[in-house]
Amino acid sequence: MIIVFLGPPGSGKGTQAALLAVRRNWAHLSTGELLRAARTGGTPLGQKVAQYLDAGRLVPDELVTGLVVERVKPGPAGGYLLDGFPRNLAQAADLDQLARAAGHVVQAVVFFDVPEPELIRRLSGRARADDDPDTIRRRLRVYAEETSPLVDHYASRDLLRRVEGRGEIDAIHRRVLTALGERA
Ligand code: AMP
Image (tube, rainbow, N blue to C red; front, side, top):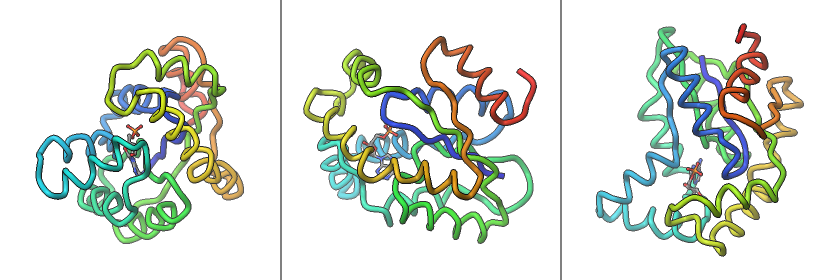
């Protein structure tokens, strides 16, 4: 079983994925976290990744898909929360393929709906290297151009669950549970 958490940078998908992962005892796979970890290694791969992270651009698909493939194990046990993957239509196709290969299905895609001014406010208050004003603008543009088409893509497959992403963390967590048909 796989659930995808989709949303713009600053939409809270990472926070919410972590909460649901604990509740369900599922694996939480954040490609952003994995990439940031790769970068601190200082390896040639890490240096390559750093260039994309610092510029607020997407890391090449084959590299990111590889990180996910390595971690999604075959078998019926447990489930996976994908946080930050897929981020474009090519990665969505990769996900279908890797899910099929491992015998999993994408059960739902939870989309965190947050208006842009609120995203900018939240990202500006964060202290990460990819949160400076230019990079924030770039990341929002990359989201709009490359990632936002996934909303329609998954809606047309009837997998999209839209969640209002403004408000308290606990309240949003309850909305996620409701969206997934679980009692809060
Ligand atoms: P996040 O923590 O999800 O906001 O991701 C931080 C950064 O990691 C993004 O701005 C991208 O540079 C990179 N990244 C994370 N996930 C992906 C992905 N699925 N494909 C390409 N780049 C990614």
